[in-house]
Length: 306
Image (cartoon, rainbow, N blue to C red; front, top):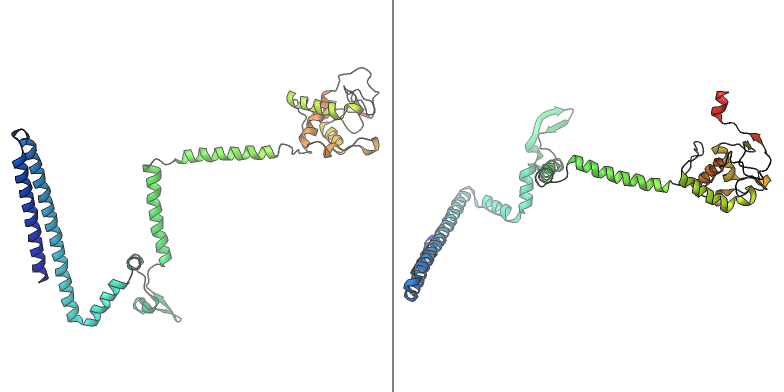
């Protein structure tokens, strides 16, 4: 009866569509002028094609609906032969179980704990039995995820124009250089006292001269000729004449001679600059130079030559 009712509804729908198209065509034909006949014919042809397409689509949908009804009727007959309980169980399974859960079972082929006897093998080692079970669901899930990530990776880097390995390398190297420069900026005032080198850079010497003029002129003179403190332009030094000894003298001071420790007021880099400037005064022989004090300093290179 349901099939007959469906057929009747389908026939009525088709007749209604056909009659409406004919009425539309007649009305349009009566109103059309000879000059517009060509446009009217094109419109009529397109309308008939459109309605024909709708009719075919309705017929296909009706056919699929009839086939699904026939399949359900056949399933009901089978379940009736097997028993009403199996039918109800199948209906309950298909109606209550979420689709994602059924899909999860299909992908992982997982066997519940209560049904492990169905996959138990005959192997028995000292009471330890073996299951012929599938891989753990979490492992299978990771496997599927890696496949998806592989597809995404391929699409992004090889289809959509993502950065190549060379481009990523250059970008990372640029970031590393910036980080290196930032770190070097924080270490600008860190000095290794075991490996000091006097600077000959004009900018460093100019900064060292400014520091000397501000802090050292009162004791050593404007040109290093000496005063309260010793002469800094000759070859004689009380506490050593190499860059390391000069730096440490400025840093730690000489309390018994009245020279303060400048480490509390000057940064290590600035103390190295003023030490380099002091050494640059060697041999300038300014007027009114103070008499030599201490021991003559001979560089190691000269000692090796002698």
